[in-house]
Amino acid sequence: MAIRPLPVYETDQDFYQALLRREERAYQFLYSTVFPSFRNWVLTNNGTEMDAEDAFQKGLMNFLLNLEIGKYQLQASARITTVAFEYCKRVWLTELNSARLRHHAPMPTRIDAVDTGDVEKDLERMTIVSAVQKSLHQLKDVCRNLLEWFYVEELSLRDIAQRLGMKEESVKSKRYQCAERLKELYLQTAKKEGL
Image (cartoon, rainbow, N blue to C red; front, side, top):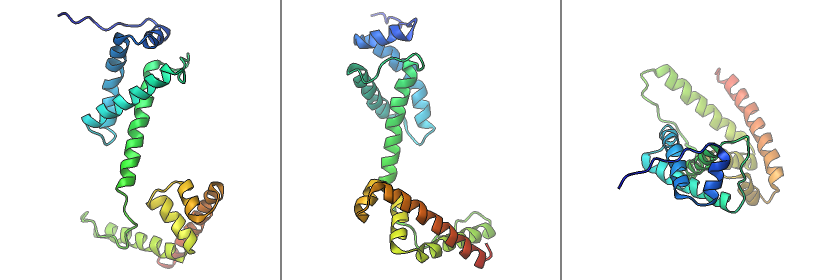
C-alpha cells in the first residue's frame, strides 16, 4: 500500500476548514507539523519522549475540542500550528507545576554544605540561609505562615485565604506586606552579621 504524501494547505483558512470537517489527513498534517518541535521543546524543559507524547495528545485533544465547539476561531494574527503548540505547551507546564507541588518539602531547618570545592562560598551560602531563617522567625505567625505556604508549599492565594479566613485580594496585599517586612528584617540581620 502506497503512502500518500501529506497535504500542504495553501492557507490557514483551508487548513481550518479541513480540521472542522474532521479530515484525517488534516490531523496527520497537524501532528507531523507540530509534534517534532513540541517534542524538542519538552525535552529541553525537563521532560522525556513519553512526557512529550502524553502532553501533545492531551493538548491536541483540548485544541480540537475547542475548535469543534467553536471556542477556538481562526484568527489572521495566529497560525493554527502555533496555537496548537501553545495548547500542548500549557498542558506540559501544568504537568510540571503539579509535579513540583507533589514533591514539595517543608522549609529546611538546616542546609548541608555542598562540596563545591569552594569552602568560602559554601560558608557564605549557609550564612545567608541562616540569616533568612532568623528573619523569618522574627515575623509574626500570620506572616511567617503566609510566606511559607505561598513560597515553600506553593499554595494558591485562594487556598491561603481559606486557611486564614480572609478575602483573596486581602491575602495578596498581606503577602506583599509580609515579603517587604521579611526583606527589611533580612537586611538588618545581614548588616549585623556583616553579609
